Every structure is written in structure tokens, then in C-alpha cells.
Image 1 (tube, helix red, strand yellow):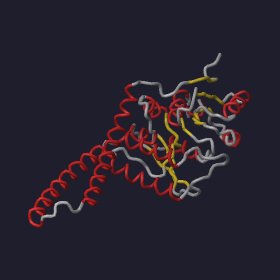
Image 2 (cartoon, helix red, strand yellow):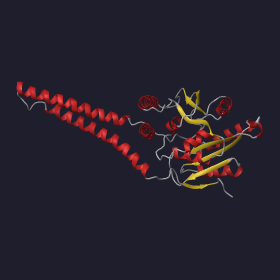
Image 3 (cartoon, one colour):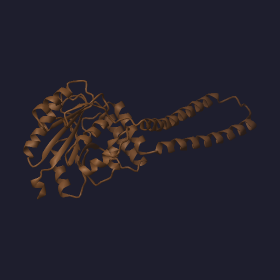
Image 4 (tube, helix red, strand yellow):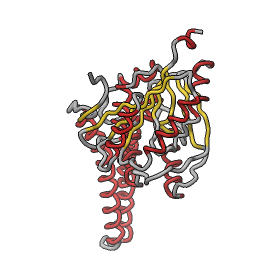
Length: 318
């Protein structure tokens, strides 16, 4: 009964980077939803992540005609993770969600997500794609392999096909905001803080307009961020490889000594020896690279740099 007297507010956090083509479609979709869903107050928080097109101008135009539209503009591109964090910080709703502006996160699912949170014992409702329709085959393959690998390495569960799109209660968002780390991987952070989550499945939806900002290389680096952030297993693997190679090389030394004493001809076999040296050298560089990745993340964390720098906003303006 209390909920009918004091309407719940849902804050929509929308990270934007060069989304001038998608924003009008997104706003119209949310506006239509809000008109139908009059029992809920909706707050739209657009986070301009250093866009180079007219994204910020479009957001400002929307804010002038609609008081529900808030925006935060970064001084440069800090990445989607920083944009989500900034949106969570400025959200005032008792329910918060993060959505992409390209409408790949169906707004119509919000009603079902809200119903689950209010009627069932869950703290968040997330969505996961059961298909990857429209994605390149190679990208889909590597995405599935990533989830298999990281779930074997990490104690923090990562759900295959899960998107950042989820509706959360305020207490869960507050827990996420308490994690101040500079190198952020939200899919892992959502799982790390715990809380009870229910998953809704849906088929992949293609962008309504514009082009994806996620190239294969960016996704690969993002995957590395996730692995480094939530498991130290690669360090164990590099140590294991080192021990294994030491053992194998010791066996080969014994065999070479025996072969030379019995058959002579110690000079033959230099091509294979060269290949072994190159192979071991490559493995050494690989292991050093793993260690270097962890050291670089530690180095960045110790600097205590801000997660983002805000250039302007219309929030709390007088």
C-alpha cells in the first residue's frame, strides 16, 4: 500500500559515446514507456563519455524540454565502466538500471524486472542473451570461450551472455559504489558484491542506429581486464609452465649426455636446438607479460587517480 502513495523511482543510467544517431530513438522509446507506466517515476541520466559528435548537444536539448533528463559530461573519454560508475553516483532512484542507448537493451523488459523485484525475494534482475544474432561468428566464438575460461579460473561467477543491463535495488548499487578500484570490470563487480539475482533470457537485438564502438581488439582488452581483475590463476599457470620446462630441459640434458657418450656426434641437431631456444624464449616473454599485466594494474591502482573527471552537468544546478 505504501508503494501506491509514494511512487518508486527508477533511474536509467545511459553511457553514451558518439550516439547522436541512437539517442532520439532511445528517448522516444523511454518516453513511450513512461506514458504507459504512470505508477513509476523515471529519471534518465545520460553520461557523455567524451563524445566527438553531437551527442552532448542532443542530450542538452532533451534536458531543456524534459526535467526527467539529467546528464554528466566527461572531460574526455574514460570508458563505459567509468560512465556507469558516474551514473550510479548521480542516480536518485530507489531502483537503478544501466542501459545502452542503441536499444539493444529492450526497455519493455523493465516492467517485468520491476515486478520481480517488488514481488519476489531478489535484489537485482539481469538479462542474458540466448542468441548472438547479428554478431560476427568469430566474435561470438571467442566470447563463449572467454566465459568458459574465466569461470574455470575465477571463484566469481560470470554468466555467459549476460549484459550490463539489469535492474538493481539501491542497496546493491551502494555496494558497487563502495568498490573504488580504478580498473573496473562491472560484470565481475556485479557478481562480486553478491545479492540475489534472477536472470531473464532474451534473443539478441541489433542496434537501432549507428555502429558499435566495440572492435574485436577492444573486446579482447576488456576480456583481459576481467581475467586480471578477478583471478590470479594466470600467475599460477606461468609458474607451472616454468617448473614444467625446467623438468623437461633437465631430462633432455641427461638424454643428450647419454647420447653423446654412446653415439658421439655432439654437433648434430642444432636446428631443433634453435627451435627449442626460440620456443622457451617465447614462453618466458609470455609469462613475463602476465606478471607485467598484474604489476601494471597494481601501479595504476596505487596512483589513486579519479575514475572519471566531470566537465559539466545539469544535476544539482540552482
